[in-house]
Length: 364
Image (tube, rainbow, N blue to C red):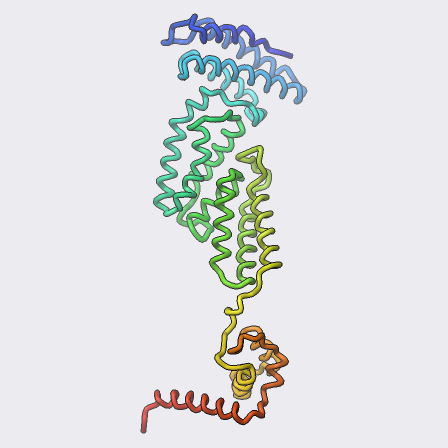
């Protein structure tokens, strides 16, 4: 079935060519033909039982009406009464099967123009809230990209783009900044954007820099790996299944971030070494360290732990004056020294420590 829209288009062409000069009210022929088509299209949609046929008829008809609406809008660059006739016709047809409108249906330019003022006001409101919450200005600018896509209108926009924006606005409206389940307001906004699958390249780059800064803020290979793993967990937790993409021509932001984090983890695991300065560095050589800890161990300062267990911990957490790696076996073998000079040096250290303790004691 094919509803004929050629006559409506011919009327629109006449109006666009300046043959209809009355701008105070809609063209009579356009209005009459629009009403006739509305009834014809509704009848046609209700008469088709096969989904595929109905979907094709629905999409093709709406596409033709959008093109006719654009002819009228482009003639003056304003939303005038003639243009509103087509906007109203489109709305009437869409209401018949609101859940069957394809996301790739082009939006009329007049419809986009009608949304600009409201979207500008909505973004100003949320931008003000973000600034009051102390969100980074760069992130605020990125969060405004979906609004600017409509208010600037530099590209062809589809029904899916508008549906995405409506969902985004809904989430912003209900975002509880005070009790958001995140470490900061910035992370709360990032969580929302990941959940909406805002896969714009600028947001992806911002997330990468943010994650890398978190990883670089900790020291040690293990801590860096843990930070990357935590970020990976947060991205996965924020990811919503089957969420429409902001940019239908790009991969999901979650997929891209998880892949990037995985590559960072592989690099750290393969190429980075633990920073030796994370260990407690003694100004003593290993034989003195071994004897010193042996003295502490025999005084039960480490509870019931065996000296073998303690030696493993010393090797993992301590370094000697010469910077050489300490082995647990070396600690055990050097715990009973025979060097008289070393024993005298250790005695001198212990005497100094005892004298220091006694300096705090009240003299009798």
